[in-house]
Amino acid sequence: TPAAVAAAPEDPLFGLMKAYREDPSDKKVDLGIGAYRDNNAKPWILPVVKKADDAIHNDPSVNHEYLSIGGLADFTSAAQKLIVGADSPAIREKRICTLQTISGTGAVHLGGLFLSKFHPAQPKPTIYLSNPTWANHNQIFTNVGLTLAKYPYFSAKTKGLDFDGMIAALRAAPAGSIILLHACAHNPTGVDPSQEQWKQIAALMRERRQFPFFDTAYQGFASGDLVRDAWAIRYFVEQGFELCVAQSFAKNFGLYGERTGAFHFVSAPGADASTAIQHIASQLAILQRSEISNPPAYGARIASKVLNDPVLFAEWEEDLRTMSGRIQEMRRGLRERLEKRGTPGTWDHITTQIGMFSFTGLNENQVKILRDKWHVYMTKNGRISMAGLNTHNLDYFAEAVDSVVRE
Ligand code: LMR
Image (cartoon, rainbow, N blue to C red; front, side, top):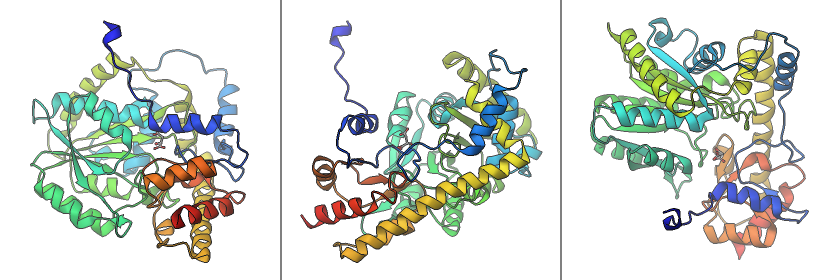
């Protein structure tokens, strides 16, 4: 009976967002959820998104009909080119399929569900997640019945990549395992492998016949360059892997509430690759139909308009540089302030880590004091969303961190 259902804990990240909103202090600082803020701590509508939105509103041919099961075709084809490159062998050889999804979360879920049904290691393939990873990965993959395992990723000592630990774990993982990889701007650590390290990861995974599952939510945020941020995925495709990609447009278009994303499956090169991908696409369509029927149109129309128009595309790249540039400035500003104060510890990782987040190294107790005493909101693992910092609160935050570190 429903009475027998135990209460579940509140989602930590959305709980944090609510607590921040309810805090009446005028000093409060929101470094919780990964959503871009401008220098006045306000959500930012990308100018190019506003333009595309206005154009759609004024377009008499736009209606409110269903999209197809796979989504808006102009959007999915552009999303595909954006991530694997317009000249990708996967596109040329017709061995990639793409479905529009409920943002990155929906793409991760669709991929997980597909693999739980069709991965040859039945009844339950194992998926290896980085330690740590985006918290939602754990529950999404558990919900679809995959077995979860971890590989080391973050070194608490260097506050950088534990590359040896990662490689050792991948070597020990059974052949055929699914390996979840963050394509760039790793969430929550802000630490990415170098291109040289990606090559070594790919060589080992090829030897172990492992399946790469890329999650990409920050293309354009890591380096400010869309092509460079897609490097790892394009490299794995060139190496001939069968793989999949969950792609979110929440952050790089600032379309958080519109739930705009895509799921891509690339089959390995070979004579039957394009037939294989047609079969895979047909099965993905069945899964999609049973879960959401067809995806929401609004965000996809906006993204599609920008992705398919060279002038708007260039404006989008400019908007991306505005966001990633401001975040980099905040990184430099925070490090500088902590070093100037002589705050105990080393702070170079604030500027070497990239993307939306920094893994500060602050512990759970310090995070709690920051919240209770300073009205600073961040996740318990010490992650801060760099976009929550601005020229008005940097001094205050540096003072707060300095104080809790010395406590
Ligand atoms: C985050 O990690 O803060 C974002 O990816 C938002 C989310 O959905 O968890």
